[in-house]
Length: 368
Image 1 (tube, helix red, strand yellow):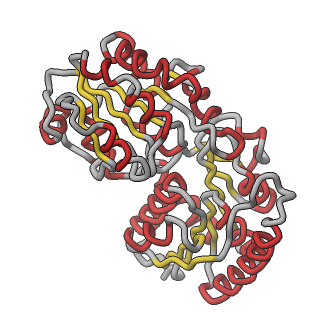
Image 2 (image 1 turned 60 degrees about the horizontal axis):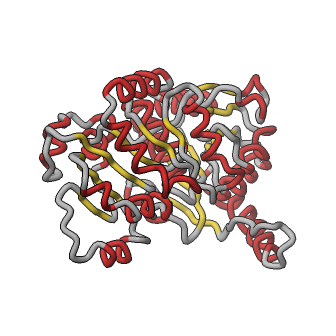
């Protein structure tokens, strides 16, 4: 009889880290239903709600990200919290007794996987971006395996540890059997018209929102439908600005619960360039215009976007230029059948399917 499998998964801070972590956990459970999985996250961050909602237990650490520049006095408190978190992580690991620890990036994993290294527990890292994050770069020298989503990652990690697996994505997106027509009708739109979906992540993206607000005349004057996810943060303000405007071809919502249907309905997507979103576009073969956020560590979203744009697998618009150019480019593109077809074919070529399962098998191997 096999020994009970016990796994720690750590990381988080954003949906981009949490979705892959939960996908890996689900894949481990599918292969080994006996597995006991414990998540370790950062107190007060999104994972503390999202992980229990997915059916897993999570322990929170008082860890925070450092302020830039690093010499800021507030970082003294951050450093104290890091040391406290590492001590707590060791305590959690000693009690839980995992055979393997998985890190998906984000600062919570620096304490949890650092503690695993100290205790001699084998570790696996999952790096989602084309530009390696600081935490994973620091943890790489002690990791047994590093699962990546882009080629050329030996710039950051020891080549012999790297495995190209792709990013695990939300399984529900791939499992949806809804047709484009049904998806469009469910949103109250017309299946005979081209549809553009604008998403800025769960909190929203100011630039993408401005790109629409400044060009409502273009929206009204076109035979195209728009699904616009404003994000919760900007929702009230945008509703106020749209008051009294009758724009039947524009659906405005703060959050889309069924992304599978929204993607299926869209002929073209406008999005930030987070690694998880990009993996979804590749697997679904979605034509996309990427507007990287300039407010992320080491500008990794621009590097993600260029990795696609350089292969004609996506269009790329700089954040600063988007309010002026984005909407007209989107309208021109969605009306160009050949462009949509080539973007779809090229982005599909970059897809790496079955990532969660491949990573889960590596986790189980390491546990032995």
